[in-house]
Image (cartoon, rainbow, N blue to C red; front, side, top):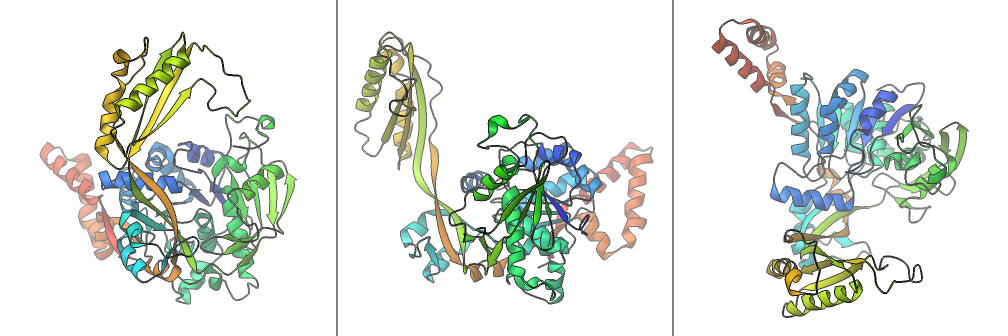
Length: 530
């Protein structure tokens, strides 16, 4: 895709699964961009998605994506020739791609090309990787067999290369699993600036360093990749760089209609951060600086799958209203290992609340809590955490003076145990306190259901065991797949069926033709592109 005005305009329309669902539509209605990126994933999100997938093989992906695409986003992407790149695939990119392609077919975009970036899920091979000694924790210590056996997911943070190659193959929409946040933006730059085409022509492996994809005339490719990565880092959290979650929140205009960011990225790695004209928020040097430092450990060595980023010499300059120029990023060769987002099952948990009114609300609450603990004392593995909400427990010490006789106190219990039965017994023990404890206790709800508790654990894995296995299946409708093999079918068969379904007087014939056409719009695989 040719850059507009010498730069490539890439939007960041979401920072997590749970962000404003329709923000991408508002952004595209207010500005023209070459690529729209959506970052839906975090460590906790991946754990949730794997939990969902375990219950339902068609879930485990960010369904908010489907909501805004169905509400008009897909038509806007097609109308504006904007490419969508997102990690909404989460733990189940295949199901995500099938749903989106089905929607595209239903809305008439039958030649929509959807690329699916996979390869991040290393859990099926986790025991072999560990046995070979190439799976470690963040300190470099090999992971024990007991831990590996408990893992229920393991997704490596892969980089921008597969995205660039998918776009080079003609993808309109790129859906991935656990691609690193900033790589969602670096991938489109590889395509826009011809690096992906250069790599394909030179037959460079998909897993090769992307700085080696640069054309011969590019003198400092690592610094350019670093600049693109920084631009990605600045917009990956959505409106956080345009005034959301900002320290100067009280001075920012119109947080109600907060605009989402656009990065105007140049071939040399420099960029300008801005937002749609007329939208709320503020793109200032201070807000951009806050986002630049967000989640950064060592500013001289920020590790990503594509490059080690050094931001110590970066300059931020306000060059106009809501326009901040970013330059000076430096890069070093990418790390040998990739971070792995993994989680393991850690028993069961639940929570419940009761409302305790006055007089003597605090004393009643303490007595109620004592009764519950005493009744469950035989459950040795059950851990009970109690909070008295309304007593100032969430305030720093000295923040307020605790009243001796509050009008009411809310008791909140949180419990966990390796045994589901323990948590079930707890759930059945809360409501009886209403009639078997101090006077006036009320406000109970249904028995809390035990929930499986997942624990996040970050790991490291040797890079060659992951990126070398990345492939990008391109999906098509059955109609498209058949016409690729037999181009004459479109005129001889499918167009005729279309006319019959629209104009045929015989109801049965018309229904049969319509049913066949709907069947032809179902998605099918076309094989691997890379």
